[in-house]
Image 1: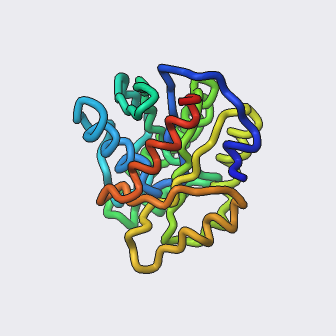
Image 2: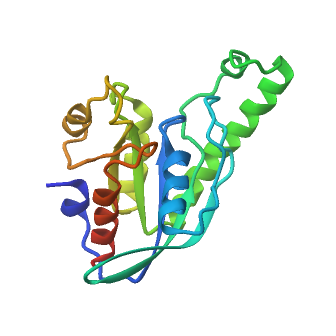
Amino acid sequence: MSILSRLFARSRKSRLTIGILGAPNAGKTTLANRISNECGNGEPLGVVSPVPHETRECSALEHCVISDQNGSLDLTIVDTPGIATSIDYREFQQHGLTRQDSIQRAKEATRGVIKAIQSLDKMDAAIVVVDAARAPFDQINWTVIGNLEARRIPIIVAANKSDLADADPELVKETFQSDIIPISAKDGSGMNELYGSILSVSGM
C-alpha cells in the first residue's frame, strides 16, 4: 500500500494546490514545464539548467486542468527550489561561475531551500521527484518526505528519468516501500499515470 493510501483520506476536491519537490537537478522544473504544456497555458515555470539550484524561488501556475470520467480538477502547480542539506559555493565554480558569483548563488540557493520548506504549509499535496538514475538512498529525499508526512500532506513519489538506461525505478520503490510512478518529464512517458495519481489525491 502506498504512503498516499496508507496515511491520507481526503474528501473530493475540484481544486488542488500541488507542490513539486525534491533534490536539485532531479527534474522538478522539467516536470512543472511539461504539466504547463499539457494542461496549462504552456508558459514555462522556470529555466532548466545543468547548473544546480537554477530555481531559487517558488513559482506557481494556476488553472492547469486535468480530468477523467468523474470530472475535472483545477490544479495550481508550484515549482520549488531544490532542497539540500548543504550548499558548497565551489560546486558553482565547476560550472564556470566566478568565485564571487558562486558565493552569491550559494546564498540565494540557501534562501531558496528555506522558501521551499516554508511553501509546504500552502500545499494540498506534493509530488516528490526522485532521480531514478541515481541511488535513492539520499538524506534529501527522506528529509522532503519526512517534512511532508509531518504536515500530513499527501505524497506522490515520481521516479523521474526512467527513460535512461541506468534508471532503476524498482530500487526507488523498494527504498520508499511505497507505490511510485515511473516517469520521464523529458519525453512525457508515465504522465497519464501521474495525472491519475493526482486525481486520486483529490478524491476523484
